[in-house]
Length: 448
Picture (cartoon, one colour):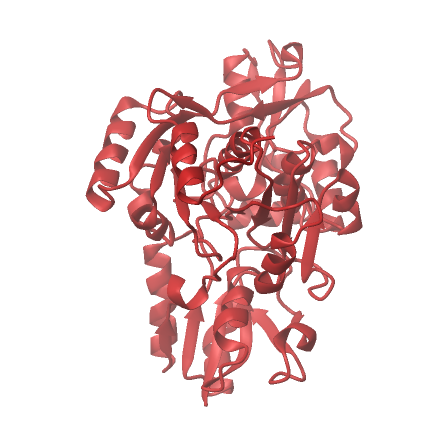
């Protein structure tokens, strides 16, 4: 029996274990390692989820201890299982593994995708922050206009009690509190539930799929709402990948974003309204090289704000979506665009005012710049976020993250939220592509 370590970040790693290793008697998974997300090592993948082959559960260690773990546990194979990393980093980890004597493995779609008995549309991306969320919302709206009942399933973010998080259903704002969601989780779930959509997430995606297919509100189509730039956990009948011309060439140099680019039936070039023509043209050339058969849709994510007067002529603090700034490496978000568009006099740099764990975040991701990531993976980080906002000497705050941050913390300065949705430019359109999908899957005749 080969001894295995799964290298992950509390998401794809658990799915790879569940689908490929849990009942595979050729392997024994000795440990997980954790990266990217703070404070997720030191836990166990519990026996309730790991199954009878693992009566003591599986320990989770910090990735920095990888070589020591390979030696100590006499590991044969290490399986790389997290997303949105440059190829150089993937191969650096591979070199560490090989130098310690073990083999290095990447699992692919055929070994990890689950087949649904409902039609599945997957929405994935080439990087974190390309615009998957607004694309998913747009697709759901278009399908609902045809009288179809859509259930979304979100890529995992299980940072708490893994047994309690095995299957999570979100249909209301109250469900976010019930499941003790982090800010990152709320950023993904809240925009769905406030629009009346049901969304599932959790740890065990085979069990989640069964629940979603039999949702009490009905289900005609499953929509996979991807995380980072990971590929779908479910076998898609229609694969959509969102790209970002602000980070051109990343679609060919980040894992596993290029997998999504090459597998896609439809590729959306988002943010055309704010990217340079040179970057857009280069992205088109890269798409043509990698996936010439894909349908390419041009799109934008125009912004709206609740109160322009909070921005115009003011010294502002800009809060952006956390993962987009950290491992997504974006230097500009919706809040930054709003600050420039509506005439802020200055964007105040919050780094010298950072408190607690946010100090560590800026050290780990030194290229974030003069923006505040909405980090909130636990109560301590949420308190540190509020303390940092309190300390920044600004006139007002621009909230570029997708949730109502005022519901989570008390902001002691005037503030306004930024909203954005996907807007298609020209033809082809998602609507006409979805019409073809509905016909192909014999979903016609269900319009309410």
